[in-house]
Length: 391
Image (cartoon, rainbow, N blue to C red; front, side):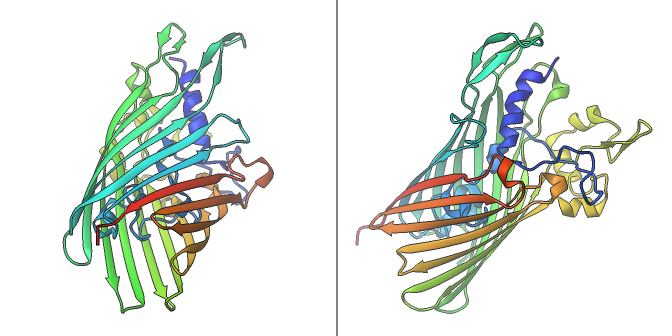
């Protein structure tokens, strides 16, 4: 089957996540570019303007309504009785004005040691023209993707919590287009997240936290009847750290650091003699690898060995300052190796708490290829409504 049309949706969606992938076979350092492509890359996009302003660091951030995305275990430590949040992001406006990312989520504490949460993520890729092999116009379609999550989190001790999330994924990137007499189809998948969160008060003014999350473990995505074309979900592992220091009653600072690695097998690379380097003999063998087998092999299958495996780890760092727990200023940086997508950008943002409502804003500035980078000037706006117990 010609994958051109249904892969178009994947290409646009992938562009939302990579933004800096190189076009040459080799980078300036002489290292092979070997980007790991997956279906539904928006599953890794920050759904909130808080972590979006902290360089996408969020695994160990203080529990809030977006915790289920970053680390579901944190919900058990949430201070509010209930919280509802929403985020709107005009996405890749340099490529078009009709792509939008929407998020709606929240949680509710059910006991003093447990909480439940749910969220809906929706991504519209706008309106795309369908053309034939000779460029003839065959109509228009409106690709879109959405995910629905349900989360449960509970404390295992005063300092440690465990979380689990179930996720339904629907990806309709072709609207059933017929390509070369074959009908494409929307893809559905089920996935799960598991998280651990540790929080410890060093003293009355200092707190440290650590988090581990493995997310998007699930079935592969099928856009046609050809099983050899199935796409991996963006399964990934995230490790996060946080240090919080309350300087005095009016000033608080937070420092965050996240490490993230896709638990997806690395594609083999072709050699000049027609052979392939890596764990797989060809791309067919690669695509036929099961999801769970791919998770295990993702730690040792890179054609470049351990040095390439280490290059697959992206780093997020962020700093946050609060004044009187009312106004926040945030700054962050995200780094991904140039042979693995090359996303490198600065982020900044502000936050405001007013009674039961929080308003957050983030702004993204690429540090590489700024003039042509589709992620340049990305803005996120988040609103959160909190409900406390009656005093």
